[in-house]
Length: 299
Image 1 (cartoon, rainbow, N blue to C red):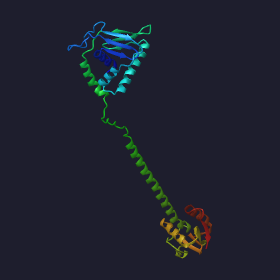
Image 2: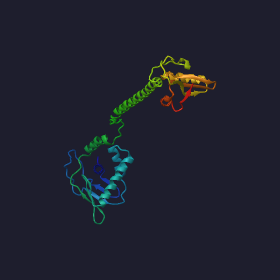
Image 3: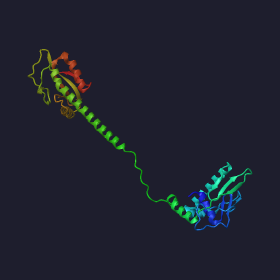
């Protein structure tokens, strides 16, 4: 319900209404409602009188009427009325009229005074208006304790994105594992094929050995071939050397031998039968597999 409607209703019921810092409206006591009164009824001339007064205080009766009709708390009703009158004064100062339906129009003249022009139509039955207020304002101004419906979140794209991220992660892990296994396999093949290169393209029976005696001596050697070792690791104890030998064997490097030089020096070596002129080439191949610490040791 608009504020001007509430003001008109209160004026018709109370015969008087004060508009803060604007003035006071009086309704003639001769104006009465009948059961047949409607919105087309004509308001008698001089039925409403206006008294200009910029010191007019807020009408407490009007505030209580607004509370009763809108069912708002009093501070909120007071604030609404203050806002209405303040805005009305601002419009009046710039030459805009304050129109109150079924009452009349207030306008500021050249002498900076507010003048009132009565309207022609009469307010319909207040009882009907009150019913209308109750019906309309109940839905608008009453406190609603119902839980509002939750708005559907427009985040349906999150699940597909998460699914794609999970798939990408799985594929990455599979790719890394495949590359690691491929690298290990290539290293294993390279080491297992090394003896054939070292033995001048002949084959050699590979065994898990603990000494040079386990090497197959039945292989055909060229006239200038010699036997020497390429040392790949040195350990201070035999237990560490043996543990390392087993570890390399688990990777497929079963052709390594363990040589104990003394109680504090135990080495893992690759036994070689080939021409010494090929030793540098062979050593380079071993370094690719075991690192730069590898060196040649003649027997």
